[in-house]
Image (tube, rainbow, N blue to C red):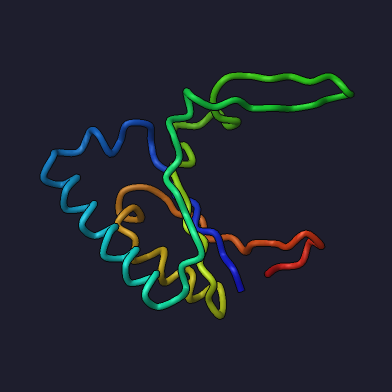
Length: 120
């Protein structure tokens, strides 16, 4: 079954950390990524650009509205994601707990659905 691990952080939070702490976190991120790839559970994932570079699109009553920035009015933003293919949500949650981002921000674990609306 596939799960997406959505990483939420405050804008510029990573850059605000001391250089040594950022390097240590990157080493941990790289080790976890390597382990997930080698174990075969890693499907994909990317960090996302700053939300100032994004647009939010809504259509209400047939009228389009396009605004700058992220869709939510919140202090945290979607910063990146992993997709893993594991046996259950408990295993996906275990992986999320090991991500160093979980110590600083939040990681949402959510099943991925296929085009028919069924969980993959």
